[in-house]
Image (cartoon, rainbow, N blue to C red; front, side):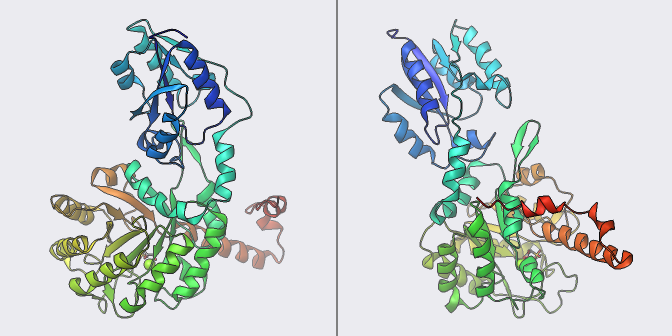
Length: 433
Ligand code: SPV
Ligand code: MG
């Protein structure tokens, strides 16, 4: 070992495997090892949030005999920490020569040059992957872990992206779909159990005809085959006296958040133009529901989100802001400000004012009617969660009607074959191993 030499190793170290140990042992040969442990935010900037929190990962690394010190690395980019420490060596597996980290690698080489530091790149350990291990763990993941993931995501990402799921199959799409955008993998962070699409799937209107036991049964189906967080749309939550039982069921099932709206009377979907008979609850009365949920939840990680319907019923900004203050003081973790306008103008004006309040909490957006809004605009205006509330069902329904019509028209099924997935694919869609 080179005495007094400093070796820097950047790690996520979510699931420690022999590949990591190989890197750390190699590093130790060159000097004292300082690990720059990537924060949740740094990791979330280029891949999925780790299973273990920063603190948990830190404890593990601090107790490894080859490591002298662990410091946070707050970005994927090493430059800040390297300038701080000026290590003699940086050690990293040679797998980063291509892909998302290629650019990070070039910057490391450039920075090290300033004081004559060297980059050491041991051969990447084959046949071992955190992703593979994670996949197996996720399959047996307990619901507790899922519950607290939403809060962690909100703290670590600029915006948390949720998509509507109305059954287990749509849950699987959200769970597994992953595309590359500018070489960075992007995916949905969780599921929205929508009262609208769950009811429509059951052929019923969105007026609470589908009761909570039925809604929970749909939830269980999704939970059986997924691991991502789920946000539950509970309409107005029902009677205050029944809320503790609903919360207990939701937490047990593994939901991460409940959203309740401040409407009373027979439930009517908020996107209907005519809201003449829709009444809002008295804000103080609704605050009692919030307090009831907060006091009956088992874990503070289970998030309580209040949905303000002032704009929906035409009550305007002042009413919405007054309600936001009251609901926030009652203990909500976030506020969904709903709108059925074609642009996000009114929700942005709400955000601008509410941001000034000392009771500000993260905001949630449901861009169904103002769908042209980009996530980056929502981020800029203080939104932390975006819920794409109904798009999967809206896609599936016309596709099915179209196929049914084509079969009727042709008195046979050949014509639809090219519009639908092959039999081979559908029978192997769900793996049976
Ligand atoms: C839902 O998806 O059921 C919602 C959102 O509550 S909205 O349809 O806009 O009311
Ligand atoms: Mg709903």
